[in-house]
Image 1: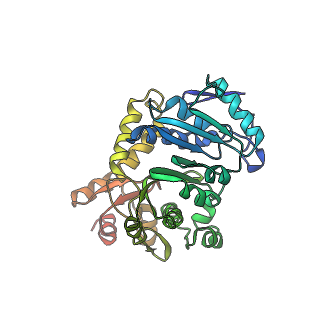
Image 2: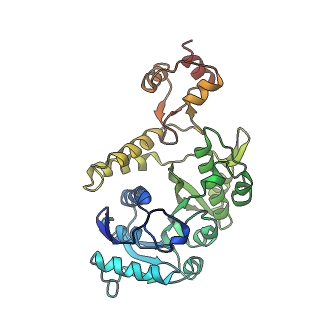
Image 3: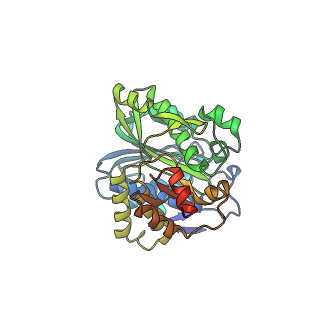
Length: 354
């Protein structure tokens, strides 16, 4: 069947349930993941990029980059998959979207193991890792081939490990102890960030998060490579424990100016301006990026722990927090959550109407 995503058409098989055994597949649930990738690349001051898509599958992400990134953003895009059926699908979808890959000098199609594809290259300004499960197997080669000021985008779908359901798996894969509680999606994201930063540190690459989020069944991080031993040392000093969870990254999750720009660009974009889910998601992240805190407050969790029976509406609680002179916003990590710099006990007293 032919489906549409963003500005492109895609030829794909019909399916009932996404699984690793499907081979080459298109996952519509990850369309927001790709939307955000397009918005981020269009919102940074970077041109003539060498872009790598090591696990391209149907090629949807790369083709969207070719169609939707602004002029002069792409010098060359390298589209790779180890599966020959995937490469055939990529070529068909490029033609379907009027890209003649045989003569277009911006396009390189590769049929290699993802690690060998990266290691045999001279390096990239943007590398996008979007695997099924853990990204661990590609972190070393990606960090090695990430250029100075380059951006590494990483998706992890093994949230059972990162969020504490599979504790031992998290210790093995991410060298940290997780916890299944109200904050598990943020702490899981911060555990993942630290793991990636440790891999980059071996090569004197300081990987700084510029946009991070947790959504549905996956976590997603964009990290900028700030090369230099002193900068790496600064990164390594921002690891700690949070209520016996960790070690994890306790630095910023976002570049707040970038978050502002992405939201504004989405409002001006013909494909995104009517997407209420995307705009709401970006607005929440834009607001919470302005509050530099590690962790958030889950209001229902606080009420349960403090035996508070009657909870005011969240908007009223936020107004009361602002009235006390503290910052507050929603958080994308939890519908019942707020991000604020108000001390915990002050918030408890406020919820008790004291």
